Amino acid sequence: MRGQKKIRKRFVIEGFITLVIALSPVLFYSYKYMPNDTETLDFILFEISSNGFADARTAVWFYLLKIIPLILLILWFVTNKQWWYHAILIPISMYSFQLYSVFTNSSQKVDENEVFYVIAVTMVVVPVVYFIRVKLIDKHVHGIDLDAMDTELQILKEKEELRKEREKLEQRQQTLSKKM
Image (cartoon, rainbow, N blue to C red; front, side, top):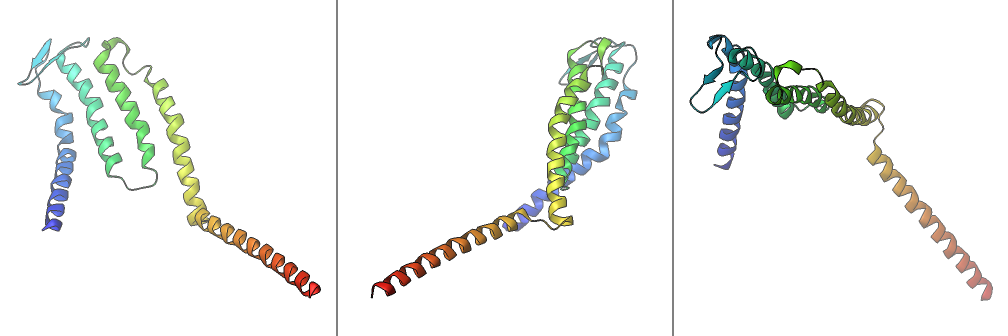
């Protein structure tokens, strides 16, 4: 029973992810079905204004241009099992900063200064990815296993301590045999 719930939950999650991926082209081009030359677009739960763009349709186009790739990249990041998946954070940060810029600023300066924020994120992500890569290369290509090396060093230290104790015991035995 418990296994069936887990399978059902996984099936629902994977189905939702598949649905989002399948609908992404439809959502991406949905701006084409909106009216031209309107200052605002009224939907049931919210209203979209032109926000400094020529009209609301252009604003929606710009929003979708940033949101859809961002959603797909986040899905890729969350579902990826490769060692390099942290590198996906760089384009995620780029689209996030661009989306923030589109929502907060007027359309005069969109996609200009976000590169400085992305460089900061890149400076953190690239060393992490490189460190993971080096660890994997050392372990799988060169056959260097740091845990095994630590274990071997610990065994060597213990052997050295035992050798020193044996020498002390032998010295004590010799001194006792001389006294007798």
